[in-house]
Structure formats: structure tokens, C-alpha cells
Image (cartoon, rainbow, N blue to C red; front, side):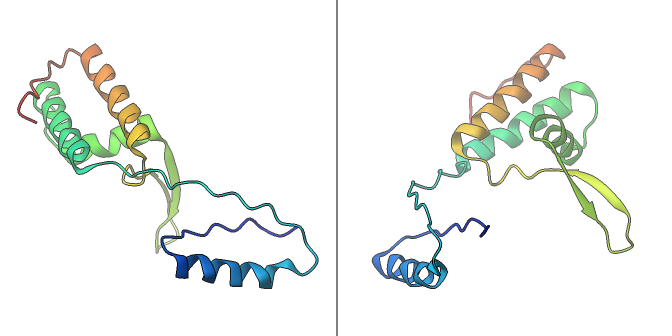
Length: 128
């Protein structure tokens, strides 16, 4: 079975290139083509608010390392991935939040904020 192919197209010339590539794949196989708009990535305003939330958490929960909170939140609310380091050691790191869609990033933020409120954090983010 042939593996799925994903192409991102932004122009007519890009579409022509995709169809040329697909012609080479046919070789007697049947393919199903699906077109959908690419999900919009998180916005810079969401990113600014995210870091403000992490700073509030760090200040109020007594662990001031915002990067540590960032890593912890990714692990807890997005998940982890396994990475093999150059020396062969395998570690689990938080999956990146940078590729989340606007909607998924909103869900991520809601999870973080709900957890933080349960811990007694009071947010003062009016200026963002």
C-alpha cells in the first residue's frame, strides 16, 4: 500500500506541480484526493497572552523559572515525545505548542488557566 501524501498549495503554479507529482504516482493505483484549508496557526496575540499567563503562574506559585513552567505545561496539557540525544540517552520532552491551530491553542490555554485557578492563581491580564 502506498503511503499518504500531503501537499500544501498556495498558487496555481503550485497546483500544477502537485498534479505533475501525482501523475508519477498513479502507476495503476487509485488515489483519493482531499482538499481542505490549512488550519490557521496560533496568533501572536495568543502567544503574548500565553507567556503572560506563565509569568503570573511563576510569580504566584513560587517557582520563578517561566521556561520550566512552559515545559511542564506542554508535557501536562499537550503531551510528550521521545527524543534520542547524541549520546544515545532517550528523554521525553513536551510536544511543541507552536504548531497548534488557533482553536487548539485556545483549548491549551483554557486547560492551563483552569488548572492554575484551581491552584489559587489570580490572573491580572487586562493589559494584554
